[in-house]
Each structure stands twice: as C-alpha cells, then as structure tokens.
Length: 360
Image (tube, rainbow, N blue to C red; front, side, top):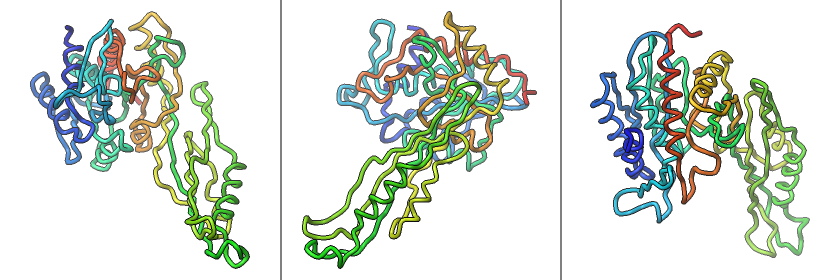
C-alpha cells in the first residue's frame, strides 16, 4: 500500500457526516508529525497550516461528508475497500482522497512563496467552514480547491475547472384571503397569485457568460408548490420553491415576481459562482495537469457550487482541480481511482514547488 493510499484510507474510515471533529483531529495530528508548518484549528473546526513567505498559494479541501448509506458503515467507522485499483467508501471521491493528496503535496513541495493547506468543515452544508475562515481573515492570494474535475473534457482526463455555477434557492410567498369555495369572489386566491408569479419566472431571461473560451449558462426552475388547506376553502397562502443555477455576473431578475400583488420573494440560500480572474494562473495549473498524464488537460466549467465560490467571492484567485469523477460523489458506491489520486498529488506538488511568491 502506498503512502497516499494508506493516508486516504485512514481519513476515509473516520466518520464525519455528523461531527467532523475526529477527521480534523487526524489531519491536524498528521500535519504536526510530518511538517514543521504553523498549524491552527479555528472555532469552526477548520484545519489550516502555513509555511514560507511571500504571496500565498492555498491547497483547499474539506473533511466533512454527506450521510453514508448503510452499506458504507461498519461499527464506528466507514467501510473502505480497495478493488481493482479503486478505493470505495464514503468520502473517497468527495473529497478525502484529494485532501490526502494535498497533505502530501504540502509536505513535499519546496516553494519560494507561502504555501497554505486548509481543510474546511461544513462544505456539504453550504460552506459553513469556508465562510467562518474567511470572516476570520483567511485570504490566500491564490487557491486550488480539490473538488472533482476529472473527465469533463474527455473520459479519464484530469481537467482544471476555471469557473463553476452557483446556486440560489428561493421561495415565493403568496398570500390571499380565505373564503368558502362556493363563493370564491369573497376571497383572494393565493394559489392564483402564486401562479401569476410562476408565469413571471417562466418568462425571465437566464444569464450566461464565457470564461476562457467556455460558455456557462444559468438555469431557473420552479421545483415545488404548496398551498391550500381543504378542497372547499379558497387558499390564503401558497409557497413556490425555485432552484436557480447562477453564473458569474448578473442574476435572473426574480425580484420582478414581487410586482404580483400579495407575493413576496425570499432568498433561502445563495452559494456564489466562481470564475478564475487570472488566466495565467489557470494556465499554470492546466500545464501541471498535462505534465502528470497522457491525456490533454483543458480549462473547463463545472456545474456544481463548491467552496471555491466563497473564496473567489472574497477575492482569492481560484481554480478547481481534484480526483472525483462525474457521478461518484454522494453515492452508495462512491469510489476514486488510485492512479488518479496519484495524478492529482503530483499536479498539486508541481504547482506548489514552482510557486515563486511573486505571482500577480
């Protein structure tokens, strides 16, 4: 078993869907044993390590996971199995495998500038740890976030995501006045008001943008509607849920729904999109990915929101590069290829070792 496989197996085996503390403890202990970096553990539970001086490059991951399937748990640990060159288990792809690769690259690289390692909590809960770290002053100049970027340009190719979509989840709250359904004119039907607001949503333009040659289009969808209390009562309340995938720049003009009488628009979650603002940095990571594989890496866009959005929103130049393949994360058969883990480790180390501290 290689050092990378062993470290990944150890991290994956630790339960961290309800409480990521033990996984953070293991990461912190490894850093203290294997490096002479300055290590901090903030109140949120994030593990952050730094070494060197100059402009900073951060390798960023997260050690929380989504709840496992029953087959992925045995006693107090997650089940981790190696079969045919792949590691299976909750968190192998998303994203303790990439965290392990980042730890080894952080230890082994010899950059001229400052190198930072960060593993956050609460990524699966909307970026809780990333936001806490940023509020506490975490502000690297550049970052590679280890979410999946495998297989976007072609199967088996490690790509580099230079942008990703965000997600804004919102609710339309329509109010009316109840009445007996035999005399509907004496009430104000909240479902009708909600329907009028849905018509507004249907007609809204969805923004799109181009990032380094790749076009990203947002999306907008009504995903649920609930209203009414009985078949013979005019409803006085109705709620409509909306899923919006956002792109860097403009948003869909959902505030127009409030032009409908009795309708209020409420934003429930807003995960920011990401766009790398330095083509030179993106090219450097793409070149590193090229150097560690036979396939040709491409700058690509990613449909899912990640902690990279919070970092980019706070001013960090960010790309996404990691071992997860499409369709692996959050599944009962979640797995990661060991050769891909090695590939991303060498990519991270290559970028970090060539870091001069004078970028920008």
